[in-house]
Amino acid sequence: MFRYLSQEACRLDTGSSHNGHHAMATFEGRVLKVASDAQHGFSKRAKESINLVEGHGVEGDAHAGQFVRHRFLARRWSRLPNLRQLHLISSELFEVLRILGYAVGPGDLGENVTTERLELEHLPLGTKLRLGQDAVVELTGLRTPCRLIDRFQKGLRRKMLRTESGGPKFRLSIGFQI
Image 1 (cartoon, rainbow, N blue to C red):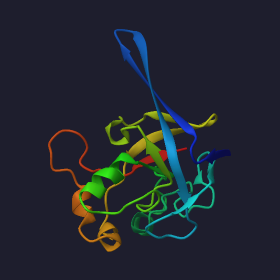
Image 2: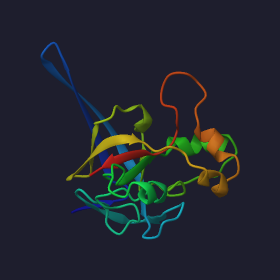
Image 3: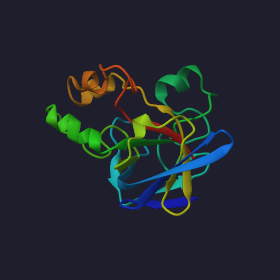
Image 4: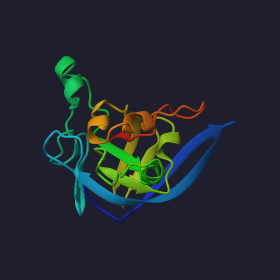
């Protein structure tokens, strides 16, 4: 188990191989806030710290577990592996949404970790992100904006979908596995 505190540094190491040579790029950002909630709901409450449990997710969070915990998927395919044990979102998205007229902050969109200075949605699948000294999480996919976003703030879902070509289709949180 890894204890992760809000305001700790995070480090992204991406390795690639070209002509037999291994290249490593390092990007550093920061965790702005952490959040979790034991109940299934849309938003999560900000916390001073969260505990990350390998192969499980955030201790005490409704989305933690070996098998999928998303209510829609769990009803249909309850034995699917949980590839979204931890949700991360970039704080820079909140500024974009603020300019568009929406008030969104850490935990509001159901993410566990709000980062700063990391372009999460542009990372390739399989990217490993080091949180603090001990925790390493692996990028497993983008989280698709669901209809509940419009219940949170009317019209927000449409703003979460990108219309420009190139890059990811969504501007939402990223699913990681611990």
